[in-house]
Figure (tube, rainbow, N blue to C red):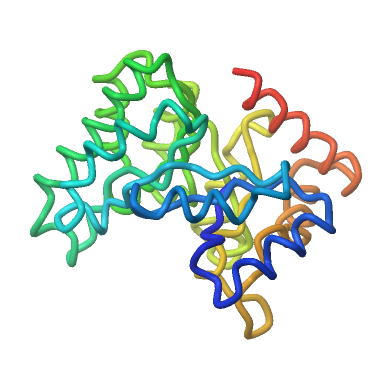
Length: 239
């Protein structure tokens, strides 16, 4: 449910590999101006969907693209990567981040709702507050959630979904958070190419390791775990 297809060194080759594998992949964008070109990568691969995004780390320099976001939104069923980032390097333009995220949520609500993949690093409470301010935005999938357990419980209570990947299994905190997530609201992701597997960027549909981890967490065999994740995915896209 979350990879950056356009940021791989050879994105067309990655798209071809996804097509051959039969995987369902949500390709996110970091700016509205990247959406049309990224969407073109999936022209021959109907199981690749492209999300319209404006990444919080780029909010200050790309706030001027909000009008383009609004023009493209009617063509996009998925929105992402969007959200807030409370890291030290992003705090100087916090105001622009909030402006962009509020605008995105309001636009999604006006458009009848979208499926959103949301960044919330060091800003989970503020992201959840924003979601509560904008009823009707659609479906929130919290990508690579790294907030506190209290924030996670609040997100669960707000009917948020969660996409988890290989990177989350590598830390004690990530594993603890994954164990608390309701199995019927968990989806898989890679966040490639920003996550590596055996020294190379993880490929967009490579979720074997996280499926294995989830099967242990849920007390299911891997086939049943895959079936449940696919069922969750089908439920999300039907909302």
